[in-house]
Image (cartoon, rainbow, N blue to C red; front, top):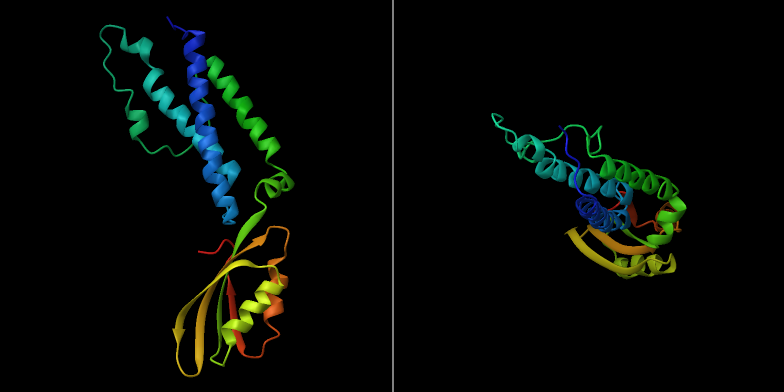
Length: 202
């Protein structure tokens, strides 16, 4: 016969999931700043699902383990690579329903990119430039980037000879700025041959 966990235990499990969601959100916040495809929402969902798997693995089979003539290793759930998370705490009514509600609210709240923009006001801006090795090329590029509101500019030379120079630019911009306009502003310099831009940087 199935035995339900005390409400205090269920609340403890729910607290663990909420903490996991917060931790996942922190990681997702950093990823969002870096303009990575997996941001706040994705990391929160993964963190909640992972916490649920661990809770189910550790506590979900207590009633079976107390029965005679039954031998099993519930820790195998945590040890295996889970290929799909199409269930949420099956058989754990209170925590399953509230976890579903938590995920639903998170998806609804963070679905709008306007909200994400408000909590991630600045993002990284990274480009690689190949140009003619002319005098003051680096200072000119730096000045143009500053005029385009790129902050905390750092330049690293990747390759250089008497004729050509290749360097990597790292900076921070407001997420409302258009990266394309910044790049096009640099294209007006005849000494620049190529600009490579990867969304999210390195």
